[in-house]
Image 1: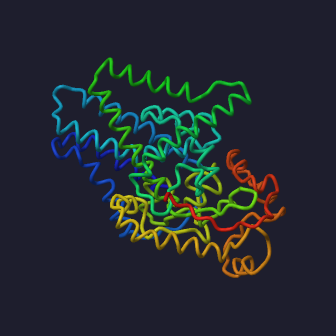
Image 2: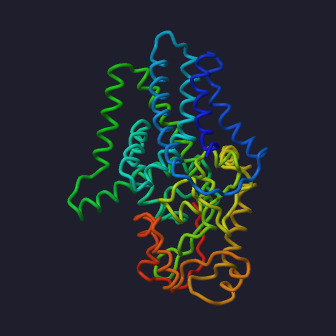
Image 3: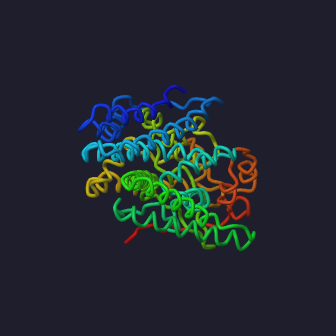
Length: 399
C-alpha cells in the first residue's frame, strides 16, 4: 500500500518549488514526468498484490490535498509580490501534478459505488472545469472504447494533437447526448446544465476576487485536461474492436487496451497500467486490479509513452507496428465471437482468456458483483445474448 503514496511526493514538490523560488517553481513540472519515465526503466516490472480496505483512503486524501495545494497556489499567484516567472512555474507545476495524479484519483472516485466518493470526484472535476467527464467517461468511453464511436479512443496514425481537440469536443457532445436521452426517458434534470452552471459560478466568483487567480485556474485546467487526454490517447491507440453483421462491436477484450506493469507507473497512477482489468471491472478498486493474459503491452510506462507521443513520427515508429501486431494476433486468437474452433483451442492451449461468447460464459461474467452498472450495459453482447455472430475485420483509422 505504501507505494500508492507516491503521488503525494510529487504534489509536495509544488510548495517546495515555491519556497525555492524562481526557476525552482518549475520543479514539479519537470521532475514528475522525468522521474516517472526514468524510474519506470530502473525499477522495471511489478507483480499484482491483493488490495486492502484502507487503500481507499489514499485517493480520497489525495484529492483533498490536491485541492488544498491548488487553492494555495492560486492565492500565491494572485499576490502582487509574486513575479511573472514564479507565477508561470507555479501554474505549470500545479497543472502537471493535477493532470497526472489528480485526475486519476478523481477517475477512481467517479467509478465508485459509494455516493460520497463520487461526490468527492465531482468536487475535483469542478476545480478543473471538466465535470462532463463524470458522464462521458463511464457512460460513453466504457461502452464504446476501441471503436470509432468513442471520441476518447485514438485511431492508428492519429497524432496526439489532432486527438486532443477531437476528444474534448466529442466527449462534451457525447455527454450532452446521453443526458438528453436520459432526461427524456426519466424527465429528470440535465446534469450537464447544472455542471456548466457550477463551473461558471466558480470561475466568476474567483474572477471577482482576483483575475490573476482566475487565469491561474483556467491555465491549470487546460494543462491537466491535456495530460488526461494524453493518457486516453495512449490507452487504446490503434487497437480496434471488430464490428459484427448486426452492427455491434465485439466484446471489449484485454487486447483492446494498452497496459503496463511498470512499478513506478502503477504506483503513481493508481494502477491504471492495469487498464484492461479496469475496463473488465470498472468498479473494482485500483489496488485490486490485476494483469490480464493476452493484454496489449506498452514498451514502457504511460509517462514514457506520453513523452513519445509528443513527437508524432517517433511515436508512430514505435507504436504503429506494435498496434498492428496486437490486432493481427487478436484475429488469430479471437477469430470470431462464436465458440469452438481452432481459435478457442489455441487460446486454451496458451492460457489466454476466451471472450464472452456463450450463454454459460455470459452468466458467469454477469454474476461478478464487482461489475458496474454501466459496464454491464456496455457488454450488451452478454446481457442480450448476442454472442453468436461472426465479427469481420474493420480497421479504425482517422484517415
